[in-house]
Amino acid sequence: RSSDLAQRFSHTGACPGRPSFGIAFDIDGVILRGRSPIGGAQRAIRRLYSEDGTLKIPFLFLTNGGGVPEHRRALELSQLLGVNISPTQVVLGHSPYRELVNHFEDDLIVAVGKGEPAVVMSDYGFRKVLSIDEYASYFEDIDPLAPFKTWKVGQTENYMSAKVHPSSDVYSERVKGVFVVSDPVDWGRDLQVLCDILSTDGLPGTEKGDQPPLYFAADDLEYQAAFPSERLGMGAFRIALESIFNQISDHPLKYTSYGKPNPFVFKNAAKILEKLVMSMYPDSQILKEVNERQFSAIYMVGDNPKVDINGASKAGHPWSSVLTRTGVFRGKDNDPQFPADAVCLISEYIAPL
Ligand code: G3P
Ligand code: MG
Image (cartoon, rainbow, N blue to C red):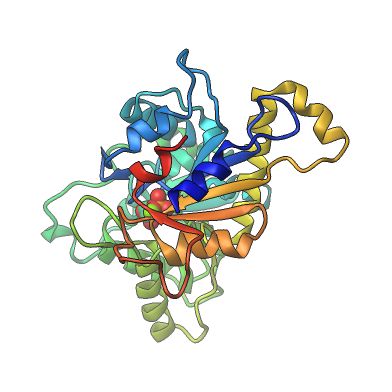
C-alpha cells in the first residue's frame, strides 16, 4: 500500500505548489511512547519542512491527550522532534473546552487530571478554576486515605489559588462544572471527591442534590505509553466513576465526552488545516473565493483503530486513514472492526514523500 500512498501524496492542487492534502498525526503510539519519539517519527515529521525550516506540508497533531496548554505542548514537541511546531498545529483532547467559556462566566469549576489542568482552563478564559488537588485540600478528611499516601499533591498549581479564588468560598460556593482535562492521577481520591461534588449539586458534605455538568476531554479506554502493553486511559476512569456514581445516586451519571472518534473533532481539525495552508500559500485565497475544495485528502495517522481510524471513517471525505503498528494496534493485516485505508510502520508511509 505504500506505493499507493506515494502516488496520492505526490499530487498537488490547482494552486501551483500548494499541496492538495493535509495530515493529522496522533501522538501517543504514533509519534511518541512516553516522552521518546518512535522509530522514524522524527525523520517523518522533519520531511514535512523545507531545508530552511519552513513548513512544506500542512499538518497538525490530533491527540486525545493533554494536561498542558497548547502553546506549552507545541514547545515540548518542537524540542523532542527538532522542528518548529506552532500552537495552532496542536489539537489536544481538551481544546474544545475553550468554546464552553461563556456557559460558565464567573462560576466555580473544578479541573481534573495530570499536568496543570487549572492552568489549561484559565488559559481558555475560565475565570474561577481550581484543580481537584487544590479543591480537595480545602476539605479536611474528604479523603480518608490521604494519611497513608506518601506523595504531596497540588504543589505545581498552588499559585492559582490566590489569583483565581479565595479558599474560604469553597465551603459555600457550589461547583458549577467539572472538567476532566487529562488522565486523573489519584483515581481513588478523585472518584471520591467527584462523587461528592456530582451528587450534592456541587457542595461536598451537604445534602444530595442535582448533578452539575461533567465533561471528559476524551474517552480512550486504553492508550499506548512507554510500558509494553496498553495503559488505562480517561475512558477507563469514566467507566469507574459512572459505575460507582450510579450505585450511590438515584440518577444515572450525565456527561459529555470530547476527543476522537467524535466527528466534530475531525471537522475542526480540517478547518485548522485549511487555515494553516492559507497562511502558507496566501494566494490560494482565490481558491476559497471561487469555493473550490481545499483538500482532496486529509490523512489521519493513528495507532488506535477504535479511536483514530473509526473517527476518520465517520468523518468521511476528505479524511483517509493510515493505521500504524507502533502502538495499540499490533495486528498483521488490517483491523477487522475498523479497517484503515492503509496499514504500515511510520517509517514506511513517509519514505515515498
Ligand atoms: O492520554 C492520552 C491518550 O488517551 C491518547 O493519546 O495521542 O493516542 O490520541 P493519543
Ligand atoms: Mg494513539
